[in-house]
Image (cartoon, rainbow over all chains, first blue to last red; front, top):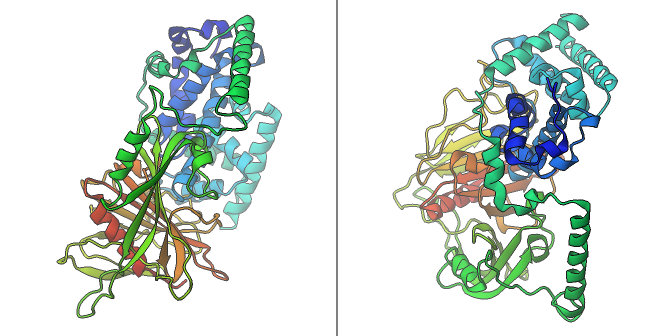
Length: 165
Length: 375
């Protein structure tokens, strides 16, 4: 992934930007779907891509791959959208559980929703969205070590919670 | 049951795979077309070199200094609304706003500026995205009829009373879209203060009303509305208490199970809305508890709910709110229910679809006025 990294100057034109971004769309959509408000995946993704387009000259390949940069923008936009939605409609938003059949998985989803925010973000990115540790670190704007630590802490929390049931 | 770290890791992986498999398919779109379509947002396309950037900064600074020293931003002036090609005129704004108020309302003023600067209620906080929106605020002097809700026979409804006040209509300066409306009445002496209850009820006289209740709230509603009570909602937690609608509600649809430990239904199903779209003149009402204390809104029309004064906010639906089910208007009330109590606030959100918004609005107002909360 991201073997040939574009430079900022290579993202100038709309077609060049699209060519660099489009291979990552499915993964970016998954981030928007998981971290954004329910039903807001496409809106979050499009708004995030417009932000990326507006700030494309700020992308610096020396700081990391394009995908990491895009993931961080989509995650930020998703959080912003959740904040806006909380204002618009006071229905609380946390993790979603879709068509779960297993009681165990249901308990797990409920316990995950109660994790501290950073731990939950790590779990969402790594386990649910399927990002690598490095990509999760890009979303969380932290080191890979921190992600591993957050995941370990999250599993401890979850274990305690599930064992109490 | 005991869980090892490895077992939990595998369980999380399986849960993640399950979630990914259940995600709705993503339809790819053209990013190039997206960014070109937004080309009207010309600033997105700016790609200036250092020299050009300096030149732009110099030009903008000179222009600002000129405006401050000689122009309308100077000490003797305040920002004057000046119609530009992309802005509707004052006359047009008044014309559009007039369509939302009774014919006998008298326009008293129209102000143009940033939403945050010209908002009708200084304490009202627009959404973060709307703070810098350029809007027209058109104020009308009008008298509203305040009527108690209809009561089932053989009782007779108390008479309506009138109250004079100011209705402020906020419109987007560029599009003329009505963003919000609010009503404020001058304070009256206790002896003169009218009872603040629901306003005009224009339900057809043949409409039957029934008393309904759910988890500590009771209210009257039109008998032809359908109801759906989420599974065993514990009002100690956040979440919907009851859904009411003119449309059929999805039978197996549980609410987003965010209000932990509020679970989805017994079959593990969950959805965000209990219907996919409102039909014409449709109404969806959600009564819900919000455990987390929210600042009570100070803008909006004062209405009496459960013996306390709450603020009814009537707004255009947000894309992630009622607009998701095709509504044209949102009514939003947050009712403080006092302490000590396991509940902090009760909220009601109503999504209305046109074209006949007034009848639906009257029914929702009547239902609100009849609500009694006994946590």
